[in-house]
Image 1 (spheres, one colour):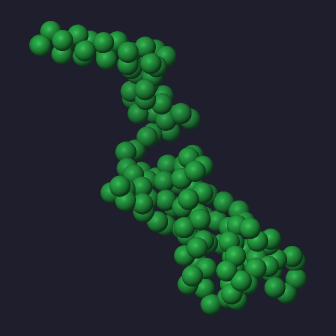
Image 2: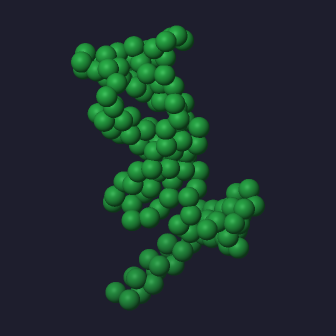
Length: 139
């Protein structure tokens, strides 16, 4: 039994060593010294650029629906541009996003999905504004 556990551990270590170019040190961007991909220091728990598009889309969608539910505007809004997206590991995942939201041509009373609505053309009804999303998704 003990021999089986030792062999399993050795097998796992061998597998892990071959999984990254240059051995286990390749697991850390820039090596074990803590340097990031671009040479910057990696600080555990600090915000970092968010790269998972599916997670970002979900965070933006939830925030947009929340904005529309709280807004007194007769029209629906939707995100028209993401300017900055970061995530931070806390007690869950914290998303810090700077986006631009724009008024659509759809009225709230129509009950439509904002993602299916066109943006207002330039003119008196067009509204575009910066919007900061700071939300935490719990594990």
